Every structure is written in C-alpha cells, then in structure tokens.
Image (cartoon, rainbow, N blue to C red):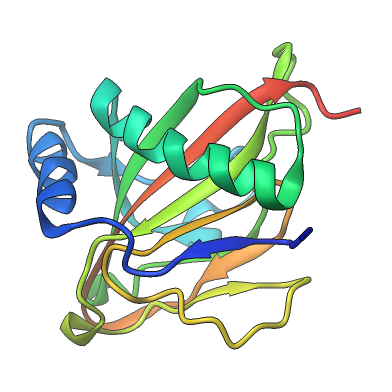
Length: 180
C-alpha cells in the first residue's frame, strides 16, 4: 500500500543503537549547515552534527529503506547513502525549521531519494524536539527510541526546538538517479 512515510516503531535494539553511538563518539563534532548560504543558517537550523561513514550502519539502515521502498514508494534508489548523527540541545534551543532534503540545485548526477531518521534518545530525556511533516498530517509517534522513519526526500519537514535536555538522531539520505 502506497504511503508518504513508513515508520518502523522501536525497530532498532539497544545493541544496534549503541553501535551508532560508538561510531559517533569517534567523529569530530561540527555545526549543522544548510544547502543555501543565502539563508541565515542559525535561523533555519541550529544543531551539532557528525558525519558517519560506517558501512555496517549503512547496511543496517538499507534493510529498512529497501523494505519501505518496496512497500510504499517504488522509487529508483541505491544503497549509497550519506549519514549524519545530529544533536539538538536545549541550551541553544536547537532546531531545524521547514526544509526538504533534496538539493535541487546540485549539479551531481544523483539525488537524495529516500530520507531516514532514527530516534536515538529516550523521549523522556528531553522536551520539545518533535519531528513534523508539512504535507502529511499524522498522529504517528516518531519519538520512540529506536524507531526508524523512512520518507521521500522531497517532503518538507522540521524538528521543533528542544526546550529541555538533548535529542539525538541519526539521519541518512539514500541516493538514486536524478529526479525527473
């Protein structure tokens, strides 16, 4: 059945989540950025990020992407992905306002086709930080620890400001031939 998103609630085990956390500990933290330098980056996005290159994590995510794609999207996508560990901290009111994940002005021969968000934090450890779609109205709970959310990268979405504690997530973008 076609759907605009595919949610796997609490899909990843504590051991799988620890693999992601361990990989992130080995990578240098940097400020989150956006595609356009014309926009005030801190107005649109404030977070810390770490780029992960771990093949085992990419393969773990690919299982969910492939299943979601077969069940819901049927887009031309490969297992090639970029992965970003993201930290939203309440001390800075970290957030990511409305955006989509396709870099439409890229001159690359491939586009982000399917986006993935993995909830790493226990929802009791922070306040705020809700994930929301613009075009899709749903009551689905995206905040359960270990949940894997897969959706087309062109859907507009946001992460509300974290008002207490810290929200951590792993996001990934799986590529395919340019959208047409």
